[in-house]
Amino acid sequence: MKWLGLEGKSVVVTGGASGIGKACCEGLAEVGANVVIADMNEAGGKAALNELKNSFPGNHIFVKIDVTQKDSVDQMID
View 1 (cartoon, helix red, strand yellow):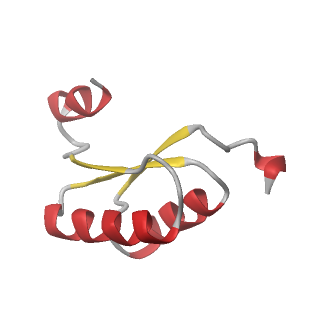
View 2: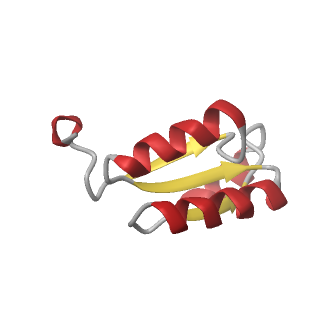
């Protein structure tokens, strides 16, 4: 889906460890984006990352984050 223009771009999905967020991560990786799985659930995030890396090429990472805390968001950005 080149029309989306996401090939090689980085995207952040908060709540990406499960449910709708995880499905969004998979869809974005499928169209060529590098996905940052951002979630408080470390075990789930790492599992989702392994699945993503095994299914789609790209530079995907997991970041444990609490989006209600500015310091946590700043750390993710760094």
